[in-house]
Image (cartoon, rainbow, N blue to C red; front, side, top):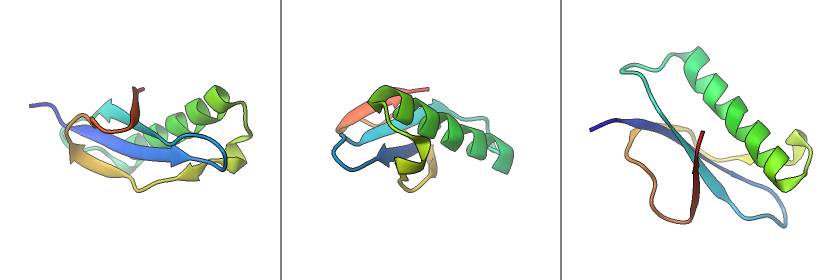
Length: 74
């Protein structure tokens, strides 16, 4: 079963989105950092807000595909 990195993004007056991406066996700090930055950028663009307004949720690795709430694979 593939493992995924997950992280929720939110902001005032916008809906939370949980992002996920298939991860390599052992994600490096660079890999996880790039995932977080990609999620922030996508969330900001999707909601037409500045990246500084995005609130990062907790990063997790080794997860299954998230199934609750709004999700998006990047």
